[in-house]
Length: 444
Image (tube, rainbow, N blue to C red; front, top):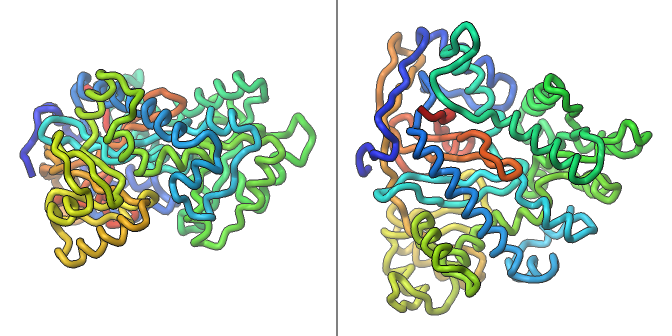
């Protein structure tokens, strides 16, 4: 750990109720969504200085513009991009026929993963998918913090973005842009959540309904009802809240989704989002593209760790030419190896915690396929937060190394989801993958 970083500021929001009350409220709001049991939970929202919060979104918006351009320039067609990225055959589906539409709405739903390094924010990856985690969780946490910290008029002593409010506005704008009715299909499966309840999806649908936007959850088996019906009952827009790998693993058929797309139901983000989310795109962006301006190169150097698509070739490290495979093998403790596609911390090897022989084998194997990256390992800085536990009557303060996830819907800030190990560890942080804790971020 590099110690508490000034970027986080020093404002610690005090708990506004007894630990048992806070704990019960947090668990009540996230109930029946498949969220794992957490023995340690936040006692208050994580607060950032206004300037730090703004910087995170300023960088997110600018970098996503570059990510989009890099991904789309790899080839002129979808077929060309599938080949350029070495995508598995399973990803060659669920594209809409109109390539302009496909590309236009690929980046509607975004959440990068960011840590604070010695010199400030560093973007480790860009999650671009309607199925990314954070919106439901951030909404649920915010409900608790606003209830506990609000005055009689509902005013709270911090600033925040509501993910569902921003996403509702995104769908309203999409409906206006496309000239269709603002009726939204939330497409997913409760099997993804590991439970029978559909509350994970219903929370969002109910929010939209309460704010004048017609929405309904559709599982794949009833998705035909979104388009095979009278015009007035159709759902021309929707959120694609699933991934192909997850549904393949669960044995869920994607054919009903393809049928909906073929019948003019636009689900965002479109399948082209897979190219934007691929870690290979980060490698290409970090290495630089001929069209990038000096200011864009400086932006990338400031916010992205050194990242390269791994193959048997030459590249540069700090303007010094190196053989990439040899460099990756010899600098294990400085690097992370990541497959181009992967979720929840899977398909990731941290060099410093990997045996040298295993690392070398993994690097050589990955170089042969050309579908992985090596990335500079960023030692995350820490900040102070207050937690509550099941077995204590008082909150306790700890230093944590949070992974920040600024949500961006339709290009607009939509709140920051954050994950961390409650004991202060760093590493591969995932709530579902390795039982990390979570919270939302506000500004003061």
